[in-house]
Amino acid sequence: MTQTSEIEQYAAAWKDRKRRFLIYVGALNSFWVFVLLGFLSRADLRFDLPSRTLFLAFAAWFVGQMAAGVWLNRFRCPRCGNLFYWKWSWKIEKAKEWRRCRHCGLSQDSAPA
Image: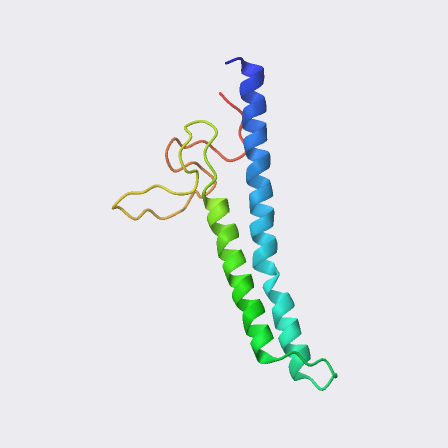
């Protein structure tokens, strides 16, 4: 593999990670839409949503947010190919450096060495 194609591979991987992260953060922060809808449906503003509709919408949001989180955490390291954010082991490690691969230590958004 040439150096140029390896650089392109890393760049594509980091672009994918950023896209996954933005989708996750967007899904997480969209919670405030439900807070606003819940507030407006309880206020006397003739905006009446049934509680069941809000509950089903919240359940759909929760499932979507969890799916986005799992998708983000399934990102694979461009260097070693293992899961970037997770390492399956019996020892629970504190995530002091969550911007590094748990397996090979590659820094987030770095180029190949």
